[in-house]
Image 1 (tube, rainbow, N blue to C red):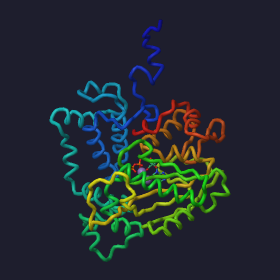
Image 2: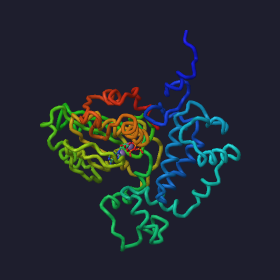
Image 3: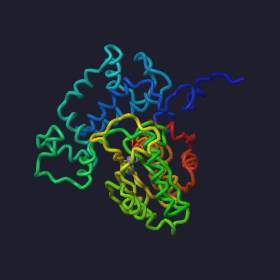
Length: 378
Ligand code: ATP
Ligand code: MN
Ligand code: MN
């Protein structure tokens, strides 16, 4: 029979309850047994992001992700033993919560002026850290104050962000995402009948709610795909349901190596849009009342159009979660001497690109067990 030899256990990092330091070697479903801790960590991590403290920000994101992957709740500090990224900083917070139900550090952040203002400002579509910082420094603390200042120049994106703020700051439901999916699919197929339209992002990971709906569109024959995004956008415009759009043309160079920098934007042709969704098209519209009693809701939609050869990489890259993506790249780099991004995978040892038709191919190239999309909620 098989003996429980501890030496064998050590040499097999994925067995016997050992938790990998890489999210791409963990199965993280939406069932989170530790949300009282991860909610606290996420607030702290975001606060570190707002004050541009990258190290602690990443540390709390990694700890959050580890706790999300556990099949049980943490009941004591001993339960943390052997878990990666749960160092002294994070332990203090957990201890606080275990002892008195809340963390004083988190309460302090939640009442902090800068945190509150940044949280509010970045909730506007088109507002990032740089703009939030600018507005905060000018002394603004509410969106009303920002809007009332006539000397501020708003980008086209920010103008749309304010105009549709009430709708797009509200979560998109799965039924709303399906209705949008039907519209996008019908529109694409009207133009190219055999084009592929796939939902990615949070909804592909099984989430019930999202902040937007993400789609990948690709055509099996490259020639038929010429100008497809522009044509889809024109068609949506023609239907009178395009409230905002920003097309980013492809800047894709096949000869370039994949980028090591994570959050670097990919080079695919894409469109950040806001679509007007008629509520009658939503299967199970909640009783949710919208301002002004209008019969539609503005929904944020991302459309990405990769060439068919890059499709698997684009699908993997756009399916998230962000932490899962970060750790896939980190794993590829440190464990495999490979560079992974949304376009491809490069083997630095063999000095060659590794092609893939499916996500399975990519996991196989990386020597990883396949992780289903709904297990990537890291
Ligand atoms: P949510 O429900 O909040 O939308 P999500 O996981 O779908 O959650 P998104 O912000 O829509 O989050 O991003 C989906 C995935 O697409 C992310 O994991 C990220 O890796 C990738 N992504 C998002 N924006 C870009 C971008 N501009 N360039 C490249 N990849 C991106
Ligand atoms: Mn999304
Ligand atoms: Mn998105």
